[in-house]
Length: 387
Ligand SMILES: *Cc1c(COP(=O)(O)O)cnc(C)c1O
Image 1 (cartoon, rainbow, N blue to C red):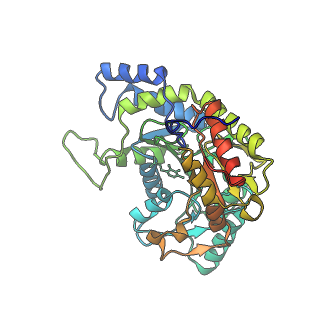
Image 2: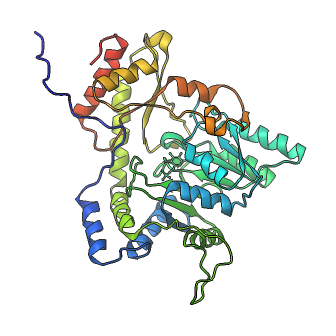
C-alpha cells in the first residue's frame, strides 16, 4: 500500500529555535509594566545574580551579546594592538572577530578528534615554543564546542605555567560541567551567549562571568560608555554601549528557571538520534568526553562517505528536501577569507570535521514526530531515497 502524496510541504523543522513559554512572557510583561525599560533594573540584577550562581563565580555582567562579552573579556585580559591571541580554529567567527576588534592577531589551533575542542597538547606546545622565542601570546581563548567543555586541566596548567590569561568562550555551553565544575568558570573570565539559537535565549544578549572583582568592575564600566562617577559626563577612556536591556533580562530569568528542562529535552533528542541512527555504517556522533557532562546544545555527527554511501552534503540535501534545517559544522577560521593571513598550528582535524560534520535539529521544543522526520530523512539519504 502506498501513502498518498501529501498535498502540502510538511512544516519546517528548525535547527535550534527559541523555546519560550508563559513563564518568560509573564516576567517580560511584569518588567514592561514596572517601566524598567532601560539597560538597568531589577531583572538585570536578578539575571546576573542567578547566572553567577549557576556558573559558580562571584560576578556576572549582562551584556548585549556574547561577542560583546568576548570583546570586553579580551580587554580585561590586557589584549592590545599588535598582540597575539591563541584561538581554536574550529569555532564560530565571533571568537576570532573579538581579537580583530582590538587590532590583535589570532593564531589558530587545531582540535582534538576526542571532543572537537582545542587540542590541549597544541596549546601547551605553542605556549612553550613562544616562551622560548620570547613571544608569549597576550591571552588564550578556549571554546566549549556544541555544549561540551574543552579539556581544562591541561589547558589551565599550561596557561598558568607561562602566566598567560585564559578566557573561556562558553557561549554554547551554559549548564555543562567539566569534572563537576560549571562551564564558564575557567580562566580569568567566561563568556555566555543568549542569542536566539542558544540553549537559553533573551532574543540576543550575553554575559561575562568571573571570580575577579576588578575584572567585573572594569567590564561594567566599559560596557556603560566608561562614565566616571561624577555628576557631569566625564570620560577618561573610550567606552562601549554594551549593556543588556532590563526587558531582555526578564526573559532570561524565565529561561534560567526552565534550564534543567531545556537541557533534559536536548539530551533526550541526542539519545534518540543516537539510538535511531547509530546502527548506520559511516555515522559517528560527536564523542562525549569522560571528563564532563555536556548541555547537549546541538547533536552533531560525522558522515563518512565510504561507509555511509553518500556524503554530508547529500544528507543536507535530503534534509532540505524534507523541509528540515540541518547545518554543516563550523567552517574553521583558518579556512575563512577574513582570516587568510593568520597562522594555523596543528593538523587537519578541524578541516576534516568541517567537511564531514553535520548538526541536526536539536531545539528543546522538538517533538517526537519532528525527531522521526529527521531520522527518516537521514536514513533515506543513506539508501538514496529522498523526501
Ligand atoms: C554564539 C557564539 C558566540 C557569539 O555570541 P553572540 O551572543 O551571538 O554574540 C561566540 N562564540 C561562540 C562559540 C558562539 O557559538
